[in-house]
Image 1 (tube, helix red, strand yellow):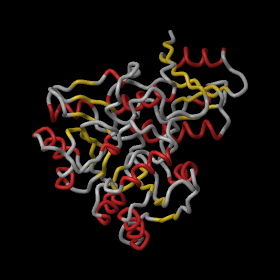
Image 2 (image 1 turned 180 degrees about the vertical axis):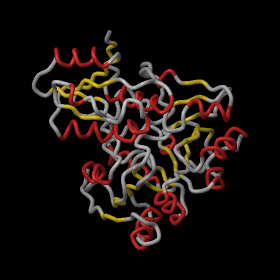
Image 3 (image 1 turned 135 degrees about the horizontal axis):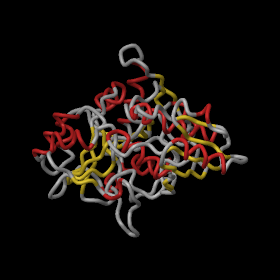
Length: 347
């Protein structure tokens, strides 16, 4: 694609960095393509009312156009303009989790183009809690479509450095801010059906959703690949996603079995992706992704760890499997796609 001149805006505080904040918002309002920080990961933002800008998201990322985008809003009132109705489940979820890392899918209104929805009759909407993201939406006065600000398929960006590495020269602007606190993309729940369905796990857990909605379904695609020809109802449901250049394998089981397996398969370019504190006991180079008993730290660290593996020249990576509940379910979901579902259970 044709190279762009990418403007950098530094916004660490929305009160003291006002000039850069307003300039970035003006660029979004004018149909520019701007990478912005959120509490989950950095997003590549464009106003949903500029079709060319939205198409530019797909072009800049190299993203398939049948992969729907999440629209970011700053108020419930703005969200309501994007949906065809506002069911009680939406109100309950908004009351409990907005602003925050939860995306709600429901029937779209005519204000949402098929480009944004990936050709679906539904739209995915969330209200970020990150003060910079929230302020940018408010100042621009427009809903902002914003998938992760990375090249499609590569690990999502949780620092401004990651965004610059992937998208410099491909977008109009990048808002440089701090590291993302959550570290994995938002939870996605669909309420466009007979029962709410979790499509992508995140920091809002299935247990928390059940406390608000009662019984929910969990899509089989959370822990397995979409079937041939099946449509992705949400971002993050594709077969391979979030992946480093290395071949990743997930190994389940206890540490001793993991250590013995890694030792038997050691060689040039072989790395371990393990929990903090385990690296001293492994016979290959290691990258850690949080503590075994701290899923929040795993989520915050995972994508940075996957990028570090590339930076260190890893060719084959044996990853310690996290748990499959709570926030750990989100971590396992991302690792599954980074590994293209290569999983082995050890004794």
